[in-house]
Image (cartoon, rainbow, N blue to C red; front, side, top):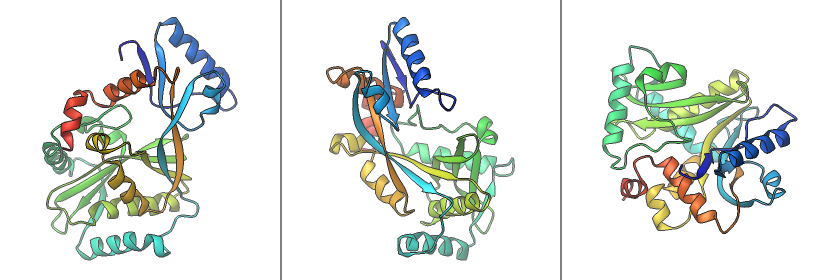
Length: 266
């Protein structure tokens, strides 16, 4: 992004070589005459030790699947949603050519309501040709019509899942997305997957920021699944350069422009 090298998270590294990998990455960025900015890292200490500026910007909603269940007061609304969805005849099916047209239709309808279009960078975008490469869970009603879908991506050498796309049609019952996520988490837990992330939620920065990305309602929604919240940190070369670093991240997330993104949720 211009003079900036924008990274979504920490430098990729084999276990035990994190410090060497970060040093190597920063050297490559310097040789390219770029300034590094990291959008969301889990551990700010290696960056602070190098004199870089750090600020907590988000929390990752993490589910420990070893202990996950639908029992308990905190999970009552999800239990109710799943029961209601099943009673209404909803089912979850995997991505296949049989549901491809319906899934694309739901995505197109969803996008039509978002005047700023799709965000990007760490967020996926719908690509029918690539849907077979992700774990796509599709909700169909009693008549077999597609009413919503979610996608999960794999990380930690297959031991983790992270939620990506979430889309539902205008006629979908309210429990549709709860149903898809809840059923996915139960299946992951039963298959021995260790962790699932519902994705990061930025810390609210006021009404203008909320128009770009509605963090308050998003955090409230994810809290229904009783996650642990792990802090994520922005890393910039210095405090003085933080505003420019933030602008570069904004441009990475909003390929259609920041002004268009502000209109997205106006």
